[in-house]
Image (cartoon, rainbow, N blue to C red):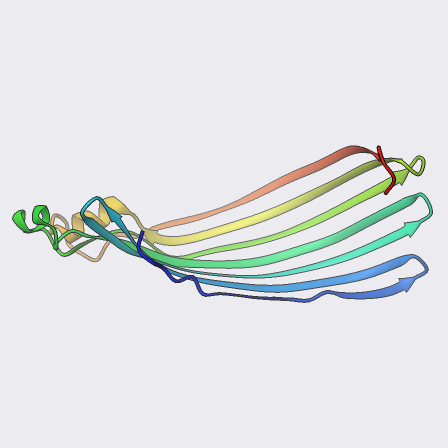
Length: 193
């Protein structure tokens, strides 16, 4: 791979507010952005640039408590992420590409827009049986929705070669996912904390 650039920016914060004795409300917002432009070599064939943009906004709200041997936490999480990018292979500058009269590049894939949206509710509790032994149980229910628009290798190559007329046909994708995760654990301190 050639030298690439990956400008990345992120910002986040955490706000804690005591709402009762031993109970805290926490809000955690964040934003992330990444831009990628990279060239690769496939033998003597220069491949690229691979260009992608990714951004995500996340918000989380937690309520936690500490009541003697019992510690607990419940919360909500929501996020939105957007991605777009393209990938080409340059072949017209190679002896093989020139001898066959191929175009200067072949579009391999292009994601016009991929959007992820999700939300989750979660909770966890820890009970101390002693100073060194604790039991933990938790769960998380999440929902994710994905929606995409773009094109892929076969259509891009056929249009570039003139086999089929342009523009490149696009695909669409839309699907939702639901999932439940849980945890059960035992913690024991074999040495002083």
